[in-house]
Image 1 (cartoon, rainbow, N blue to C red):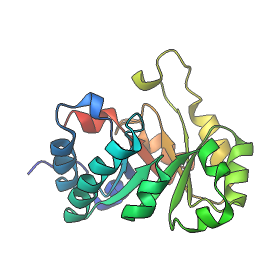
Image 2 (cartoon, helix red, strand yellow):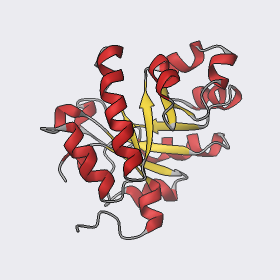
Image 3 (spheres, rainbow, N blue to C red):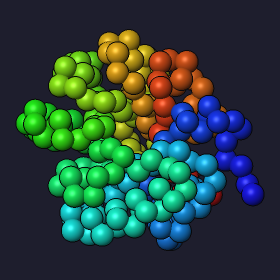
Length: 194
C-alpha cells in the first residue's frame, strides 16, 4: 500500500482539508486518504446548505472513524451539536458571535485568524487551536498575496494555543511552517490528487 507519510510524527502534523470541487468523488477520496494514514480531516464544504452538509458529514464521520481519523466539522455549529464530531472549525466572525455557553458546548473548537489581535481574542475566548494563513501562494486564493512565514511566526509567538498553518502548503515547505512555530499544517490540493 502506498505510504503518504515518512513517519508517524509527520502524519500527526498534517491536517487534510476537503474540497469536493477538486475531486470526482469526495467520499471515495476521503476513504482513500484516511486509509493511507491521514490522522485529522476538516470537512470544509462551506458552500453547501446546512441540510446538505449534515447528510454528507454523517457519512464522512463514519469513514473517518472507521479508519482511525479525527473528523472536524467546519462552519455548521448546529450539525456539530447533533452529530458530535471530534471538533468544529469556525471562521473568526462566527466564533466570536457564539455565546460562552455555545463555545463550551464544543469540546474542540478551532478558529481561522488573520491578525495577532484576532489570535489573542480567540485565545481569551478559549479556542482550542487557531488556523493562520494563507502562508504561501495558492490557487485557492488567486490574486491575493500570501501573508508569509513572518506572519505565521508572529501569530505563533503571540499565543500559547496550537497554531495550524494553511495555504499553499505541501511536503516540500511544511518543515518551514513547523520551524516557524506551527503545530500542524493544513493541505487541501495535495490530498485531492492522491
